[in-house]
Length: 145
Length: 145
DNA sequence: CTCGCTGTTGCAAGCGGTTGCAGGAGCAAG
DNA sequence: CTTGCTCCTGCAACCGCTTGCAACAGCGAG
Image (cartoon, each protein chain N blue to C red):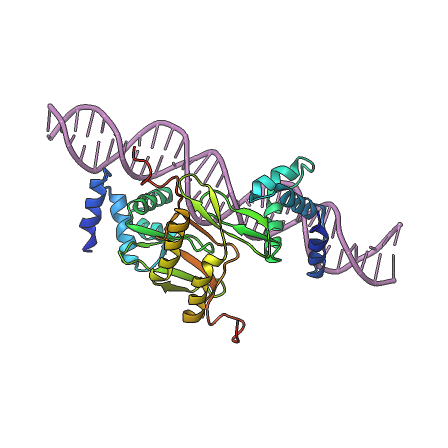
């Protein structure tokens, strides 16, 4: 992947070591595509390196999260999921009935963010934002709200 | 407390039994005032009834949540907290540094809710909404070490 | 190259919360 | 009051995730 050297540089600059475990976890996240659970990442890596501990996976994910290389999406339901961080991040709407997730452009949250900053001095953390609810297909009422 | 007969009626109507454990948990929530953790509720009830199991507390809290008698606030950090459901409920901003919580009027989320409903048909579940971030006092712009 | 500091890992215990199960208790009928 | 159907509770095991600790290994110095 093209992003690897980038990740390595970020690690080194922050004073972290490049270990095989970290490389393997990063590979698994990159190859897995969409949102993955920590356990899925662990299961993938263990195929080729059976000694990797699940605790190490969680520690690596926390590290990558701190360096803004991955984002954590905690849907409340199910386990937390992880994906590679992108500059123009989208957020998530999660249906509580069918568990499907829908992408949400960051622009939808800009107005809210501005009001919180201006009126409370509160800087919301919108990197891993997910909101639950009922999607259009699962909505019990097709009439006016 | 005034609300008790109301709660009892709601339980009975839905076909649930009124047990001493449920009464004690409800008392603890009502008397505790603000947002409480399940463990705090358990600790309070155990003072007068030492056999109450923490699992029972969680099951009662899930039941009360299902009946919309209490709301769960999962801040991500710390444990989940519970409070009595109010018609005009507020939301929460949670500082990731000092863990303090700040109330947020529902009006701040109305615009977002409208857009999600109108543009996606997605009805967001805003009963237990909490958003993380940095509060004014913990903002790094204020003081540089 | 070797050495050694110190960040990192594997292991196992621990924590908050959930679940399966058998016995116990609320509530209604008689 | 007694009976009995179910729901509910206490217990213990379990799950996802975190943490304490001793041993290991990356990587810069010499």
